[in-house]
Amino acid sequence: MPTLNWIGKEAVVKHHKEVPFRLLEPVPELSCGDSGSGNLIVQGDNLHALKALLPRYAGQVKCIYIDPPYNTGNEGWVYNDNVNSPEIRKWLGEVVGKEGETLDRHDRWLCMMYPRLVLLRQFLREDGAIFVSIDDNEVGNLQALMREVFGATNEVATIVWEKGKKGDSKLVSVTHEYIVVFARNKALLKERKVRWRRKKPGIDAVLEHYESLRKKHGDDHATIRKEMMAWYRALPKGDPRKAHKHYNWSDKRGLYFAADFAGPDDGRENRPRYPILHPVTQQPCAMPSTGWRWEEDTTKAALAEDPPRIHFGKDHTTIPNRKSYLFEIDEEPMMSVFYKDGRAATLEVEAILGAGAFPFPKDSEVIADLVGMVVEPGDIVLDSFGGSGTTAHAVLRLNQHLKEPVRFILVELDEDVARNKTRERVRKAIEGYTPLAGKKRIPVEGLGGGFQFCRLSAEPLFDAEGQIRRDVTFAQLAEFVWFAETGTGYTGQADSPLLGVHEGRAIYLLYNGILKDKSVGGGNVLTGPVFDVLPKFPGPKVIYAAANRMGARTAREGITFKQTPYALEV
Image (cartoon, rainbow, N blue to C red; front, side):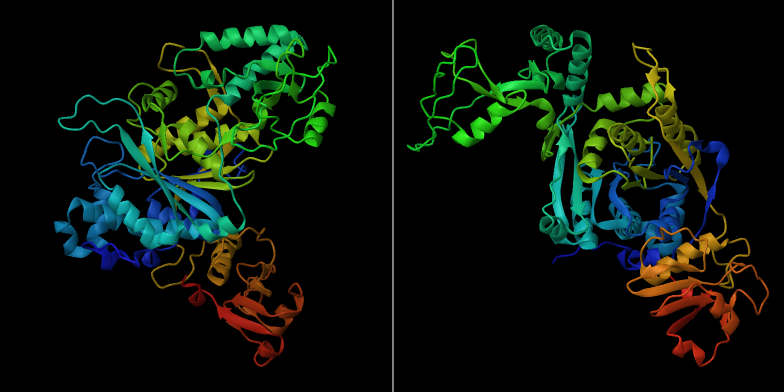
């Protein structure tokens, strides 16, 4: 497979391994609601933040969405869009060296993206997926980079997002951008027959209005239909709700469309032909020239349901139809080209944060569609370019219809943005707000939830001599031990020296008085008496400790000993 090459590539290919592990430090005063919700907003360089998150979340994330710098050369963005920020220049100087001073801006962008994508891949579950927004400046480079990191066989699609008019172009008015989509393991998705589906635009609002009419009129379905049709007519042209105007009939099962019941005109001569009696006249109904769509047994079963799934006219002279209920066909595949006016996202953010708060944010409804296709209740969504907090807002939207919430993790580099924009937007989405901009200042109800706000520790997990920092807790080190041993994120409770069992072997950690003994020869060192009080496991065991004083008994007990901190070069 052809690979992409650029100045500085050799220096950054393995750079993610050199990034030190840091700890996440909660900031309670910046957290919101239930800090134990599993939602995180992390302020810090996303390369270091991803490395810090990896021991807990490796292999645990179902969906990643990122909106990295587009590398347009525009200096005015909150995210320094030409990848020429002091943080990136410092990093390039340290990693790439003097070569970095002469890099083309595309080289700089690739040097920045490569190690981050390599780390992001490690977060994805085998059935997970990543979505990356980009425009023409770097779409070709991004596609090549993604094929190299994720594998060409895992490429799903490049979606084209048509965002609206732009009249200031000299040659061609570019009104679109892209979303590059890769699976972690596309073959597995095919094997499991996974289908990605999104909610059809406008359907939730139509069903919500219909339910309000049901509460108002009960089973007076004639009045409900009259008011539904009037409501559809009043909607502006282009409103996504108007696309469902043919769903205006109603019965106690729900809102439906009287769909064609005729067999397709495909030349078949043996189409089902049988009488269907009208429920009022008890006479056989008119039959389409091509016969019926369903076999007689299927139609009998549909008629036997309460209410029947066949829609009849006033009498038998009208051909019956089948009932297509809106709530049963509310999903569809994401199209590879779609339209959504880009201004809607700006208006949403300005209503929450004020006019001019964040240029060109992404649309939370679009991101909710993307994420919603992939995730199930309880899954995790990660965004390492947090920006205005769109991904968190999208997840909170999704959770309104789920019994078990999807969790989000956002990372934002800029401290001011993280505190005053990312955090504030998500907080207001959770708690509710009165719009700060726009014509309508009607209070918006909160979506509920919560998040924990964290910073990265100033010092890495290991000090300059390679020793574990004295303030590291057992629970914090347990995550790193588990990740070092299994390559997966730790999901245990970290309240026992037995961290868990992975692929048939038990993994233990002796550290920081987990056995209530911090003496040199006690709970942090593997001795015979210490081993005897450990939770039992009949199979092979891996034990991390400061030292091993069991001698030949180590092998007899099926123990693989690993010394901390030296065995933790993960």
